[in-house]
Amino acid sequence: MTDFGYWRKRSEEYEGKYSNPERVLDYEKRHRLDAALNMADVPASGVVVDIGVGSGELFNRLEGHTEAERVGVDFSRDIILAASGDDSTARYVQGDGGSLPLATDSVDLLFCLGVVGHIGRDGLEDLITEIARVLRPGGQLLFSFANSASPFRKLRNRYVRLRNGSPSDYDEYDPRRIVELLSDCGLSVEISRYLTYATGLVNTPLNIELYKLLDDYCDECSVLSRLAMTWVVRATRDSSSNR
Image 1 (cartoon, one colour):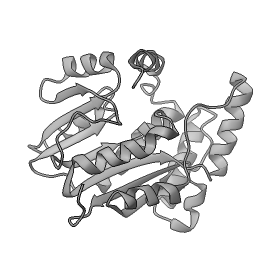
Image 2 (image 1 turned 60 degrees about the vertical axis):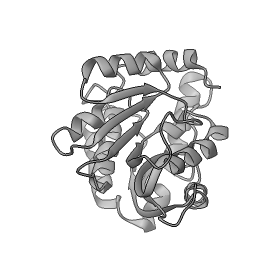
Image 3 (image 1 turned 120 degrees about the vertical axis):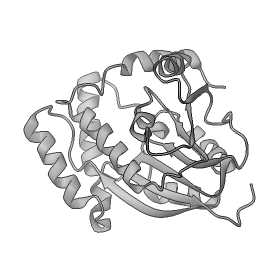
């Protein structure tokens, strides 16, 4: 069972963290969202879901580009209340990734960006299984995760440990394992993007420009994918898959 009190506390901790354009973390989040939207085939109608909807920024970006119903799912009741108060055109529901409050075969496009870093490794398989259940045959998934093989992420983790006296609690994954889990659930990865070729330790314009330069050059380069801190993949639910 999800500890909603825990997620309320986490939402308070993260409030405002990505609102400063001079922060590297803000650039990372925006770049991840840009990549996912550019990779997605947004349907003209149907249902679009964002798991871990947060403030609803993704839905704001879709405004005027689709007539699809937009459904935001988040662990935190406080986040859901805040997002629904700011946006009356979408539906927001509180839910657990292990048991999504969505009907089977009901979703045309689903975004799950950065969520798996927070749910714990035990919850990963349940989440992917649930995503496969709610997607229609032919439905698309945009999914991001932290790359455990990235030397840049390892450097950031060392910095976090030194600064906080404890390791980062953001889970990282072997990309091969993610692709395998998706495939086992009938989700075929079609496109991958590789983001954030830097440590994110220094909030300076120069460091952000370095991010942009490396990401623009390397984000589609599979040879350098091992170095990227973050992967974004697009997967499609197989039409022959039975859930």
